[in-house]
Amino acid sequence: MATILSVSGSPSASSRTSRLLRHLDKRLAAQGHHVIPLDVRTIPAEALLGADFRHPAIVQTTELFARADGVVIGTPVYKASYSGVLKALLDLLPQYALTGKTVLPLATGGSVAHVLAIDYALRPVLSSMGADHIVQGWFTLDQHLTAHEDGSLTVAPDASEALDQVVDQFSAALDRTPLLAVAG
Ligand SMILES: Cc1cc2nc3c(=O)[nH]c(=O)nc-3n(C[C@H](O)[C@H](O)[C@H](O)COP(=O)(O)O)c2cc1C
Image (cartoon, rainbow, N blue to C red):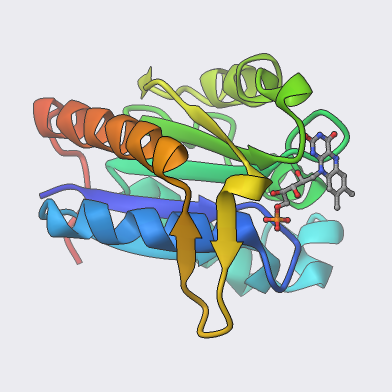
């Protein structure tokens, strides 16, 4: 069983990206993984924007990254790139916070014109942070995600099939990787 940190990088309170990650978390949990959800928007703004490396929330988040075998990084595409709050968090993590980890990059966006944002914007940063293996990511159009009042999410069939596939590839990659997570 791998420990997976599932990070949503949307600042939105009604984020589709966050709902998508929580939806996919269930599939990973059903495959036997221990999934820890993290919404970057819940980290105090003064810590993120004040670059307060010693803030307890940043220290705790850094530990969550250190203990994870795998990390799901989900972001909305904003201005053709990943979100500013996700960047603010990544900037506060150690340079090689992803060393030895398997990473699944995901994005949601409003236009297929930015389907490559994962590969030209997010993937290089994850790579520079030492990610051991960045598996195939996936961009989901926001119109394929329907949020419900109870907090649940319906994913359009075409998108759902592709997402299940990348999640299963990520899960299989974790199963092949010696686990690094520290107990406790
Ligand atoms: C400030 C802002 C900028 C955006 N820029 C883009 C963009 O450049 N390309 C794109 O495809 N979608 C863009 N979108 C649409 C969002 O990526 C899309 O609706 C996404 O699913 C929102 O996710 P969220 O609900 O988790 O924040 C933008 C939305 C906002 C609010």
